[in-house]
Amino acid sequence: MSYPQRTVEVVDAGLVIDQSATLLWEDIRRAFIYDAGTEAEELTCAEFHLAEGYSVEINSQMPGWDHAIEHLPGRIDNLVDER
Image 1: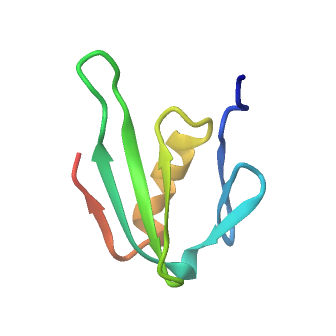
Image 2 (image 1 turned 180 degrees about the vertical axis):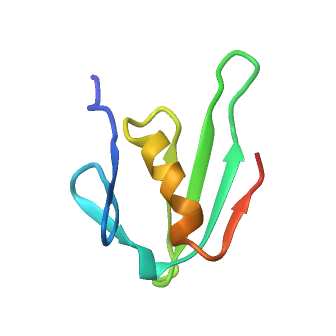
């Protein structure tokens, strides 16, 4: 069974994940960017901790990743880049 490619899109209000859920900029309390890949496969992730107490993760294999990462420093005050 194959699954559709997950996507991330930047909109004025926040980040749209898989065209179905929007992470509002104002609800993101903290974000971490970190490397999670192996020697064989590079993978960078961003994990968003939200006001509601849960977190959402996106990764560098998702279409829209580069555009999303460019916007994070200007939109999230509590951004930790551990790359």
